[in-house]
Every structure is written in structure tokens, then in C-alpha cells.
Image (cartoon, rainbow, N blue to C red; front, side, top):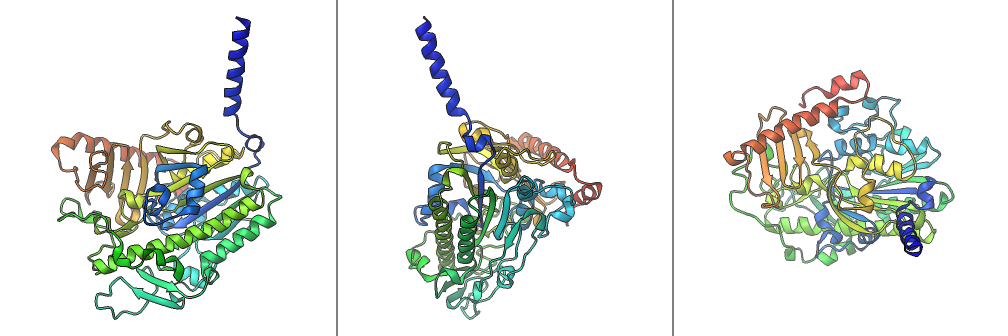
Length: 493
């Protein structure tokens, strides 16, 4: 009997030991490499099932980390999303609903995600776009955008020519007769550029990240590397577009007649095949151009990962890969961001923690959860009041659940999203005066049939309306200064 008890005790000890954090984690010694892309849909990545656009370097992170299949942003365009997960407060807590820095709204005493690490003797650096920057304008100018200087030990802007890069370019948007020249702004433009990667902002960002990893490898660091692709313009060295040519071989998403007839006007995205005047040829080139920009991004991610490995830091560095929001590539004839459908509100999210087993997690998570989770993995205590959840448990047991629903907003159309495993509920205006959408995502994963006006789902709609009102009340009941609380309660314009 004693022998059996001894054997069982040994087995239990082994199992318990396997669940303990590594010594690096226990001592708070992890580095953090936060890689964020711009306007990237998870549907474009091969580790998420895309068979046309190959992303071997992002796949490398997924092969050794936890890949989340139901991760959502908290704002479906750059400014609100980045301000939220970097500050720790939802957009409607701070009132940051546009393209400003969160700092004026959270006040000087609140601590951002990288600032917490900086205050705990980490070297913190920003390379490229981490907080909001205008693309292409801010990248052309090489300015700071809506940055927060208190977050960083050092920061580096990465200037590039964007749509002005020499090469073969075409404007796809608003150009039905083909006479419009290549233009800047938030416009669908493909530029197959001359020269190599170092002509462009993302090539410069990768090189600077490599330099910083090498020069700071002996000190704990929190390094944010912000790539701007695949944000328009779809510009990259020519070779990255070759796998997707001729562009007419691209396969567009399923289209159904009268797709918009059962949704409110506010639910029709701000960029569509119709209002951009993009015929099928241009739509297919837009997809191929986007994939070319993604391929370029992936290659630059690879350069950073290679350096992390060659410098012997892979076993002491948490690597996070994500995007600020998703992106439509013709689903429902929608393009770009802002929409609250899954393609726009969902994001790729991969977290690789040394010593933890790779996994795929289908639990609902938010970008808001990164701040508390990564901080605690590094032995740091996040400040009270921040509005994310610690999802460390999902890294070791991906079948757990930490949320019943995720929350996202599209302020420019007064839109709110509550997404569960069963339903996607979208409401326009806090009083629903601009319309409602309800999709059964189990039966209708592509979200073609709006059930909001179906009497059989009246109780479901009422339940979500109450849940949304409570969520907003909870978000606004924050620990920010009274001035910010008052600003956050104002109606969205």
C-alpha cells in the first residue's frame, strides 16, 4: 500500500510541477515582443485556414503558441481600438472614439500597458505604429501620430514613400474609367514597387526592431513593433505580388442577391463594391493586392523572429501577434473596416509563452485582455480599474471560458456589438433608433440573415438590449477622473 501511495504521490508531483510557471515567469523575467499589424483580417492568414495567402512566419508563432479563433477588437477602426488596449480602458470609458491619444483622457496618473513595464525596470520601446498614426499621411511625414511619450524609454518612427513609391501602380477605388492617377489617402491603391524592403516603412521597422533586440538583449524589454501593412495603399516590393498574379484567378467571397435588404442603412459599410465603383476585375486585384501586402508583412515578421532566435531570446520572450481590427475583402460586397460583422470586428491573436504547449482556443476573448494577462505572466500587478480580463487560464486550458460575450464599437456609425458563441447582436445608437441586426452565427456563420425583426427572436433581442445597456453602464462606471467620466457619457456624434 505504501508503494502505491508513493507512486501516486510521485505522479501528482510530476503533474503539479508541469503546471508550474517556468523560472522566468516566476521571477518576472520574461521579455515581451508585441507585434501588431494594421487592418489585418484573420481570414488572410494561412494559420487561420487561408490556402492562397501563405504566411509562414506568422504561422511559426502559431505553431508554438495559442491561436485564438474568436478574438475581437474593441473598436473597428485604428484610433479607438489602439487607445483602448494600450490604456486598459474601453472607448466609452475614456471617450476616445476617434484618432486621439488616450493620455489626455485618462489623465497623467494612469499607467498604460507598456508604462507599467517601464515603471518596473523594463526597457520599453515603440517601433512604428503602436498607438494610432495616420496611414499613409503620417508614415510619409514620419510623425508621432497619437503617441503617448510616457509609455516609452525610446520610440522610433518609420518613414516611407507609401503610394508615391516608384513602381507600377493603379487606383482601384473611384476609377471606373481607369483615368484616375495613383492617389494617397484612405484609398484602394495597389503599388508593385521597385526596389527592396528597405524602401518601405515596414522594412525599416523590421530592421530597427532587429537592432533593438540585439542591443537590449541583456535587459528585460517590452518591445512594440507596429507594421502598417496591409493598410492601404497596398504597396510592397514587386516580388510579393507575384504569387497572386494574374489577379483574375482570385476567388471573391460568396455574393447573394439583395444581401442588404434586411439590414438597416447604418449596417451598410462605408466602403462597398458599389460606392467605390469597383467592378469584378478591380475587386479581384484589390484582394490580390491586399494579399501581396500581407506577404510583405509576414516576411518582415520573420526577420524579427529570426533575430529573437539567433540572439537566444526565444525561451525568455513572450511573443504576441495581432491586428488593431479586422478587414472586409468583399464579404457582403463590403470592403475595409468599420463594420461590426465578424470579418471587421474579429482579429488574429496568437500568444506564445515559453514553456507552454501550443493550442487552438475557441473561447471568446478581447484585445482588452492583453494588458492584465501579459502583465501577470511577467509577475507584474496591473493597476486596479483597467477593463480587461486575465486570460492566463486559457493558455494552459484552452477549453475554459472567461467571457459570455465580447464587446466592440464602431463610433462613427454609433454601432455596438455583443458577440456570443451563438449570436452576433449589433445595435445602432444607444436607443436602437438607427436599427438592429441579429445573426445566428451557428446556423448562419457568414451572417446573411438578419433575425432582428423575426418575432421568434423578440426575447433574444430584448435580452441583448438589456445586456448592452448594462455593459455600457459598467464601462462608464470607471475609476477615471470625473472630467473624463463626464466626457465619456456624452452621446456619440
